[in-house]
Image (cartoon, rainbow over all chains, first blue to last red; front, side, top):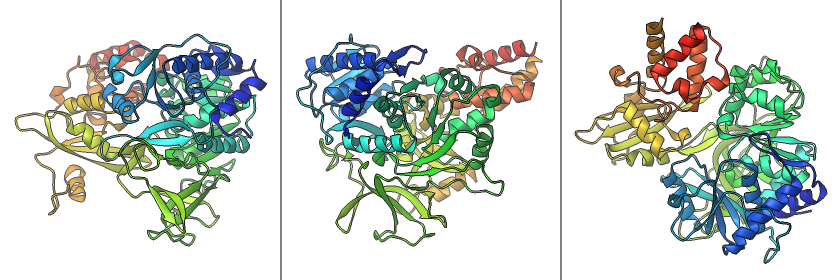
Length: 502
Length: 83
């Protein structure tokens, strides 16, 4: 069995050269043979710039067939890809590229500001070429990609995944969803988001098609249903909020969705009312609730029933451990808790990351501590999530232990929002907290303006939009004279909540 | 009619994305989309609000910046749909 993403995609390109590999945002198709040539073009160009095994290459491009070929080309050259959101503030992307010391970056348009001087910038798509001879073949222990997630200190942290971590997950996907060359799989999530790993590498390993969904369409629940019908999508994968919005605003019954075979969601809890509505409008496809932090890929899964009982009031469980890893619920001392008792969700096995970039096991310079627990000589990744096993033997998710929240499937460390707000010249300090409102998470920011400055909500939102990704912008701002503090000088969060929201 | 629409749009924005803001700071020609004050989720909520409040049907391609960047633009858009 092929155990690198390079070997898996190579095999599909060899076996299904004339099938469509990528349907671009505008509907243009690229076959597996063409993708192969384009990827060689990228690999050869990177090689000519001195990129080789062990290097990192940044990707700051919009979704396109060329970008997909770029990702394949980076891995063929032996390097790991580091995708960022091209619409994020440039300073944040620069921080990421500097952190993992990329040796080159792929761009849509040239921009000096995105990387340090001297870093190679490869703009647009190189011409395709017939072959590429790597210096050495990619091995399962090579780094395949680094995905950056929100960090509590205000600096994003890089999750380092090797080829073997990715392939064990992709092979699980192929088995579980009966993937074939006839699939047309949605690519709704952006490439810097971990949902993209299945979106891209499952169909590209089986000879199927990746259906790219552009940035603005991805956020438009009114247009997505028509798009799903037009492209004949067979496998849908996204965060629940998109599906909820489609069920509510998308006029689903006006469209023919008979091509849909599998609907997967992950990234956050799917509130039951929206899920019930969607299930009644889409009774045919298999529905799966997937769970797993970026650090482990997907590690538990639950297949939903065909109809949702009226009596049900709780969200569905995250299910059972996938067969390529182990998942356990333990107490603070690392002992497995009895069924029904809440504990930490921990995971070990094939899909678990190497570590954080800059951490002990991730590589690079000094950086974040590794969140591994050693229990009886085995290393487990501690997800930071809480869960319990229910009567049916499924794991039920019970939220987070720390200051991380999830919105639209994105992990958000509240500390990173505080750091972004603190950067405003007109603010003395800021504290951020999250409030659950039904299924939604509402982010509040309490700010104290500098003396003589006025912090209007308009000014605050404008500043936040310039320094933070859109999913991190607080929903509510509270302008205070000072932040309440405990006797030790820390922000008194319970009192802050009372003062701000009552 | 325009005044009624304007008032309703302003109230929605002040409650939805500008809670706590002094209403006089929200001018009718202030850029809302291009400044980042309303994001894509805000547009979805705004569209849902306009449909419900004024009984109009808004198509997906009509929710771009040209129709939603300022209070003035939103009011003109709703007026054109209500005709």
